[in-house]
Image (cartoon, rainbow, N blue to C red; front, side, top):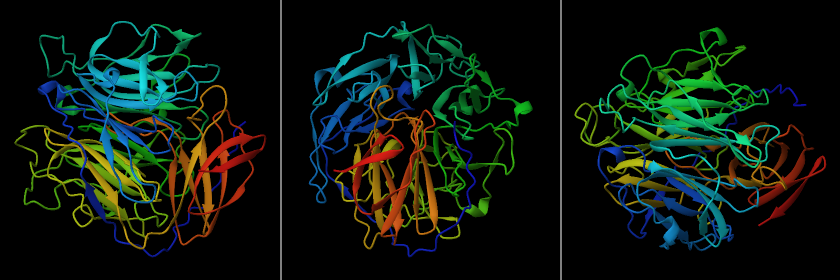
Length: 512
């Protein structure tokens, strides 16, 4: 049984350091191609050789995808070498997501393509082979992915979000393809459930949005191609999935949806949602007292819309792609990174469109620091990953750009606060503990973090969850595991990387 959470939301008053990043020179990698690669361009960040350093697998579009092995000095310089095995040098890749599909403790890859998608089994040392799961022959234009473990199954449920139907001669407008949901059938997968109607999906995310004990599937769609009649979607993952409707409290949203991120910003134990778009970006929270998925937009004064470029002199609307929540100065307040860039040459949208770094203030508003922090690239950015590459306790950044080189930035913020990273794992099914919630108490506040696979724009991160702690010198952790078991609270020291596994009602902690 899951416990009902009653939480008092408190906003800590902490000193804030100004964020600062330095660009790192890495081997060239470019996401490129024709109109089928205007979207996509994701990057997967995960440790593929068991050295605790997150490596990068970047989509290439018409170019081969690339693996960049992390050769960073722990606590020091950030560096990568290009080292792509033949099985990963795939063309037509729009993005990739790491997850442990077969529960062997080695991360695998779901590779999204214009063409047939691939599920690659991790062999260790960054080598992969094709799984023999039967997903059928689906030659589609896939731009989104998410996964979850449903009760009673040893394999994950897989959702592939598809964009325009590239085989429809009447396209591209109003010819959106259906997305596909694969549920396990014993030791393999059955025929896909069609997520129809499809409205040109660009991001999907399984999340237990209401802490009801089941992850539902949020879908963000690109109005540019569905034109009319479409909207954002939320699928209730019942025995036969169904769309939430107005009868459930779901409101109709029509946006140029590009990316999704989910994070509890208020300390009430329920995640807020950030949706990137052309024009306004949307930060949404559940209506107070709502009995269903009824969301409302944050006010303009909250500072999260990021609707026009903040520098460069181009006043046309921005185009948002990947989005990630991250505490970049470790002050205990989550910030927001948004990758920006024109689709190609859309005249109604800004061409000079720098990436955003929205820093949360003590009053819960957000202020723009992208340019001041050194992240204001004018390239056409797409996917991104915010990860601690050198294990120094600060979140670094990788950004994939269309028709420009991949960029890597080291976080060198001075006077940053304390921190903790938490890497969950468990034996048996769902080794990454996807669907678990980490609860961390420090300085009178509680941070709640759900472990998910999916969202962003065409790429995701697998590994430790990073928590900024401000001036706190100790913290307490407990874990609500995917099956609902709740651990005891455990006291820990700050500024360490913790690997955590269940141990009855307790937790086994290893510093790595």
